[in-house]
Image 1 (cartoon, each protein chain N blue to C red):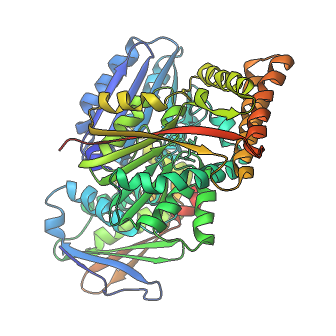
Image 2: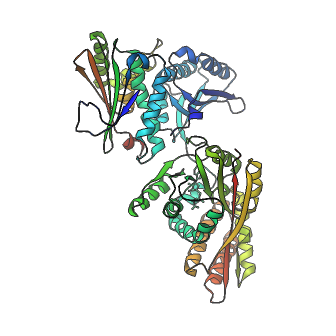
Image 3: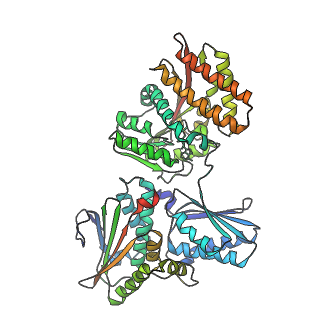
Length: 173
Length: 392
Ligand SMILES: C[S@@+](CC[C@H](N)C(=O)[O-])C[C@H]1O[C@@H](n2cnc3c(N)ncnc32)[C@H](O)[C@@H]1O
């Protein structure tokens, strides 16, 4: 795993704080990586927040849902890159990873639900289904509960980027 | 920042007397099967319950949607399957996501309620937290600092340490520490949002950087274990009905070999001349009044026992007296006046004291002020400092 302070970015007007990348296969070799990575990154970006403990707990929860989603739904070969950016109270998490067309399609449908006008009802439905929860449940929660703005981007070389924009501190104050 | 010892794994337990099922720790399973034993424990617990069933997630620090799906779904199942059953979920305001996440349960069934555990936090909270007390806390710290700045060094505080001030109040002690001792890291924690807001504003106004003010519950902190060299908790063990619980937490976050430093009062030993008898009578009453609200303003001299019982070593203890000779006697008088306002004006009223009792109670405070401002008078407020080392 690599952590650098500078990295490639889609949206370089928002200052980048951290960039990590690792092979998607390594990432997916152990479920605990989601928890470890989200905890680690949350800790790194929380020190100068209004309330570092509250913030890091929320940030870790949000990032963990994104990572768990990618853990479940991703393409074959390549790197998982995670870039985190911030401007004022706005945090932006960018996950870039391999995605074939069906993978991208899964995300497109999930994001469509998040952006739907009845997103809240869809969230409840996904939450209280008898079946195994849908892979998009975490994204729905981020949209509905955390007020996150979620977008996806198709990249070259069979990759995609999932972006979450959050304002965590306004919520807690 | 979140405690790893808490985040590693999770536990649950059921308290039959309280009909309460609690979840602790970190719950981020990959598959819902990993929740099976917890879910069946939940089912078993509910089967023996009548009326209201309590679910306590206050110490649940992390929970992913896999776990929530399994757990919340089961709760909903249970209330739908039994019309006599009501469920109340208690969340913590300290864990930012918890209340929102669980609140969806309320929308699914009218037999489920969700609430944050926050109110009636410690016995005297409403009396001590109101805005009017803030300026007085600042004056108190100003006067105690004259003594403590030297005392702290004797108890092992030096520059460059990792320091935590738990129950920091309005944070002025943390500011003084930051300026005088330049800790490497300084975390100041309290469970009063208004005090923390004030603390942050003061720090910003004074251009003080580097103090990490955090919202938290001292009896179950989200801070990691074994990370501070010096943990202070001032004038606060005395406001809890179970100080030993707070002490355990102070011990947990302290590094082995680090020190815990506490200060507490014994108000019945406040004194003054002239008019010593009336002063004495009033402060004896203060002790009874606090006891009525399950707080122990007499805790000071008991500190040594508390620290020994908590398992600390190398206990050091001393006392000092803030007096009217510490700078401007008016400062001392202001403190006493604020005590009168809160103790006689609010707490005694709440206890149901008669007007006559309150009048007499007030008199002692006025006599203490009289002694403080008297050209040949002397007035004192004694404080006990104790510290101990966490075993390696
Ligand atoms: C008497 S004040 C002392 C404040 C400060 N240490 C000082 O010396 O001025 C007690 C403080 O304990 C805080 N407190 C009470 N219960 C608490 C809890 N469970 N967790 C954290 N702080 C708490 C109150 O908000 C209050 O600021």
